Image (tube, rainbow, N blue to C red; front, top):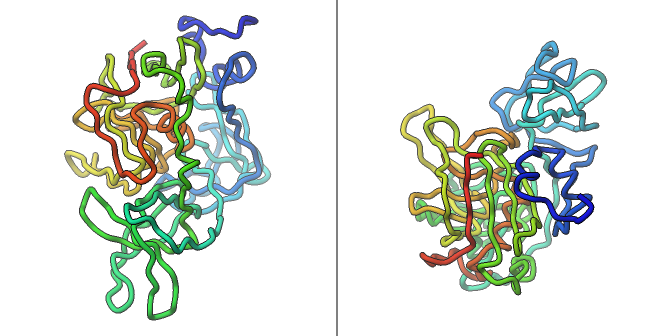
Length: 341
């Protein structure tokens, strides 16, 4: 690939780490992403098995409950050839967990922002998780647990008169409710951080391809690939539709919930970087509730790591101004081709 151009046929022959390695070394990618250890992780599964080897055949040592924080010492290439994800995390000597149910997190306190624009501003959680409240002062009511990398629309700043603590006031457009976030754990985005990427590239010169068989997304400018990411699309009975679409409806955050029965229910406040491609809610969006990319996992949407979804959100059209909660422009947007192959 000395020309630096990867044909679509070559792209579809590659998968996972091989694809990303080829792209990083040969193509004009805007971003190169690599996991590094050590780092802190949050358990995302209801129960995560710790094994004595980096494979599902390893003997069970113990189980970790959801939201347990762990220290990942090393990233291991393990498993077997048929596994779609061969990455395992070493916690200690002969102690391993599957990476698909661990979110890489950090704990960062943020400076207080006292001037909130009247239209609101986007904020992102920077702790593994934090509590929220549907009320403060004299009538507090517990709100949902908010997770690392989830995003929320901040509309004000208030002080809890009981202890003087500061809380950002946020608005949930899906359920028409106000809730409050501890101010130290929300980082507010500047307009520069939300500025569009490749704004000089015409709309008709950008497009995205999503391969369902390979669970891979690639973004193109002038038919040259500039970004690649592993994804998780619709599982059985919730398949992601195929064909040509457009990112005509975009939101930096939304509370996604639904499900037809108890087994399929989901309730995901602060789902970040939502680029919708259908009228019934199929979107490319960030995902904080699993790290299991490379395999079908969703209710029809195209799940991505939050950082990948943020790049797509900024790169695709139409542009969402930093003081707006959404843009809805039917008939416009960046082209998205979802194919089974």
